[in-house]
Length: 496
Image (cartoon, rainbow, N blue to C red; front, top):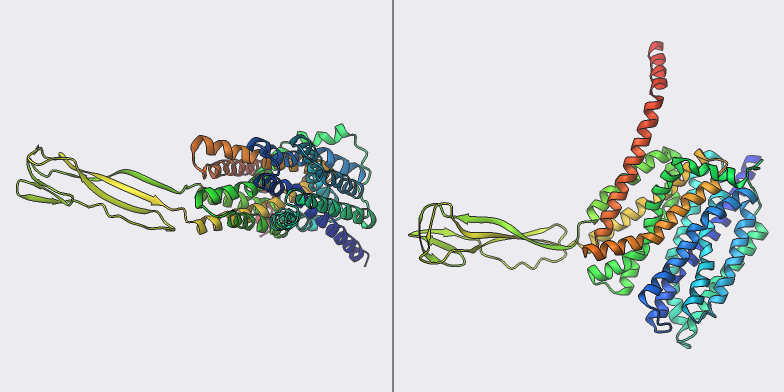
């Protein structure tokens, strides 16, 4: 009975945690919609560089501050850290309605970006309430709060349009106030209904707590999270211009496609936690990284037209060219047939299409030798990179990363049971930095190659690095334990 009551209380805390994290994640991604609206409607004349900074500042703040917030969570408990974070971050959102310049908007964005650290608080606070066999599911359910990004994508544009009907210049100011009120309410609910709990006998100094970060394992988990979370956040922003530029979709349709990527990835995180509990986080990560390699390899093939040298036609004997046309060449009295170019209009084909033909390179009355080239071959390959196939692959890799997010954090309580907050904060910080630097890397690759799918080449290479790193680590561990395993097997065989 006591265990049932304890589990019931744990579920209540999990519900509060997940609700608070969902709201925080919605606030964290607010600038992506709000700043775009303000510029598109001419309310602020910010440059492309200024817009880039306003989009990135909250992501950067919420990433780099996860480590110190994780330390505070381990030391003082999640109730007070989470409620304080929610209440304090509501203030810059209220003040955002008064912002009248880039500098003020940037400063306030820096402070409300602190809501991004809620992940480090929630991971440590959720983990301490659950036994080992429940860790994966609990952390996976908590991580579903990532879907808060989709809430902002869906709701914020409609609210901004509605508020701007009567007052086109100032109507937008209501939105950050609504977000601030929501944070304030959730913060008060957390303060009233949550029960504080922290690691027992936690008397370590900050320096001693930071000692766990010397472990290579922390940085390996961080690399995984850079991929499955950081690149997820990056593509949540990158896919909209990708669809609009490559497939000429409208803003609304491109936004819907980007949401189809981000929403399932956030929701399925709970299933990733269940799989990690059932089969083990390591097996799940093998599947996630392998699927990331395969899917990114398919996604990196760009929409393209290639013209290359095809099969030509050579003279079978020595002679004189007596007649030349688009369909044949005559040497003395022998006709040699040529392939004529056929105009093909194939659109939205799933597979590449090929068109081969020959073009004459000799003239009438010209004397040719045996094996001399009469007509050069030309082959044109067209690959449409079908939009619907591309969308399905994007959704699948998003789902894979969503499962991977839960699997990464399943590792942390197992290896660092007394430093979940600080290690979770560090791993979360590395992942969050992926969300900040990802679009910058993608933009650089696009500029240097001129190919939109170059970002998927980066994903392929990074996925391979993570997969090889993990496999080598697992192999090393197995080799170290091999003598012991050999003795166990020898004892078992002697019993039979």
